[in-house]
Amino acid sequence: MEIKQLRRFLAVIEFGSFAAAAPKVGLTQQALGASISNLEKELGVLLLDRGPGGLTSPTAYGTLLVAHAKAILASSSRAREELHAFRDARGGSVRLGIGETFAPEIIAEAVRDFHRERPDVTITLVEDYTEALLPKLEQGDLDFVAGSDVGGPDTGLLKFPIYACQDIFIARAAHPLAGQTNLTLKNLQAYSWMAPRSRPADAALINEAFARAGLAGPSRFVWTDAPTVGTHLLMMDDFIFMTSPAMVMGRLIDRDNAIVVLDIKEPKVERRATLIYPATTRLNPSAMLLMEGIRTLAHRQVDKLGYATPLNVESELGG
Image (cartoon, rainbow, N blue to C red; front, side, top):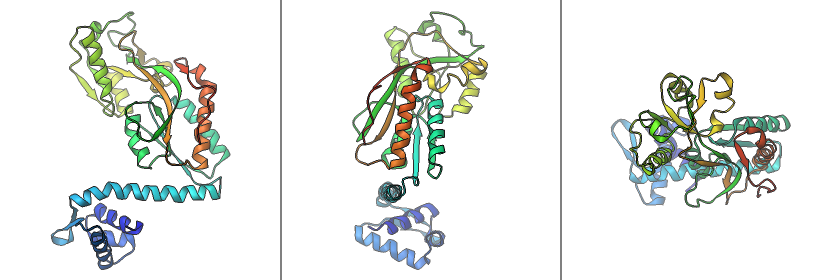
């Protein structure tokens, strides 16, 4: 398989026909069709169903190849970028995934400092739950992730924990439980909860805590990965949300007190803010410098966060 064949195959998938895809890849419709046919002959399988009117759809084999083709093209792009980065240490790009546990003010300051020193490096920031970022990292769409150590089996990723913190429980200031002390799970039983769609384990942890207390768990959840809309929803009604303090401290709670922390001791959920990067792929120099900058700044400022316990203070990142 050649890179150009895979790129052409994905173009046909994206645009739905040879006629629509051909000008996008700079070929005639006949030349594009011949290229895909050669790829099918080489693989010994039919990748596309040719329908009436020139429309195409992937076969089961084609669907399987899509994921591999995207990974191969991403790897090829990374190789090109890394070569250019080594050729010109002030060029290239860095693609950083930012998870929910890492303090945003630390990331922002590190990125600002990095950009001032290396303004020609293209920086891409992707913010999401760590569970949603890791597949992008494994596929080569991100260079590294500053997120949470979500556990699970070894996937060929190196993990460097920076600090630990406990999840907090938040609600709007007008919530009936706001301001009360020593709340129990019984007090929370009647309320609706918000939970991350990308992290169903959070709801499971909540229900397990209720079960240990001999109580029925919450039956009403709103599943959301939309932080902006979710924040407005939280401020509009009596929801409860278990979250990392990094997502709200200093932005909502300290800013206007519209959101408050509830005095709940259970369940206790510890997260570890962690730098995560591939074990088998050498980071380009720019990515390595930004990651080291985040690590250094995080260790220097972790005590100022007010909710974090430092980890690996004297350690260095691997190459």
